[in-house]
Image 1 (cartoon, rainbow, N blue to C red):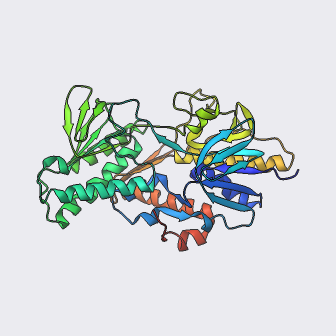
Image 2: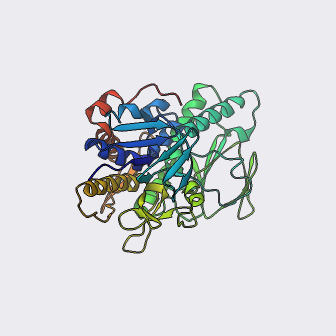
Length: 395
């Protein structure tokens, strides 16, 4: 079978997994991404918390997609014409025979008044840079204008992103205060969550352990509370209580890229497009939708969550099905294999759940670092792992 014109939208975990697999088999494709680099979204909390330079968490697409059959374009997707089989971008129009949509997610604000206007989010390296710069500048302002609200940071949402971020800040910010001779009397980190426990879906023992470790380091857990409105320095909770802080970071939920809904795909209330067992859109078999954009329902009736490992497995699987198609073979249905969860609570402690086993402390951190090394090897082998782990990329 002749090669079809394959167009990939997005260079996140799903898009890159598909691209790398197609490149290995010399299958031509064009990948469109708004940045000229791929970044490690599951490690953004480290970048925001000042653990390493931002460049540590990204790699140039040209260092991964190196073959003549691989074509990466820096552009932003504006719309998708399903009937016309074309994608409009800021700088042009691209036609396709096979389309892979892996555009990732955006923050969901759930119509909470003032939340979008008065909070930071953590979806990109730019976001991480904004959070880090804002907190440092706000803390430094305390030296000349000792307003207690300047040293208060509130994070809304205690899923994996919120917990890892506040764990990182709990380690970094006391050192920042000390190094700049800023009194820490008014320093406070608060984590607001709508449930009675943090890290929903994680082993109960690890949830309790993570909560205890955060509280030991001074984090105030505000549980069974929802943020109902947000102002420049005031956060109002469902109970009527208020929190005053100059920094609010919202990690309470995501939704799919709105391009899917605008294109007319069948979507759920989070904008995720419904796919079949082969990850094809139920509206068009020539369109594959993966990662955070995809509404895939398992045999249990549960839909898969928007996580990095789900996205990576989807991207790898659909590319294998495209290879089968080229060999005139039947596609295979997608089955997700849960490889567990690892959460860092700063650079010195973590918790992990792999199958029926759990780990904590340094062991969990080793697992997390090993996961990154394995991922880099998958992207580009030893060249990427050892030579491109940190490079200059404009962010």
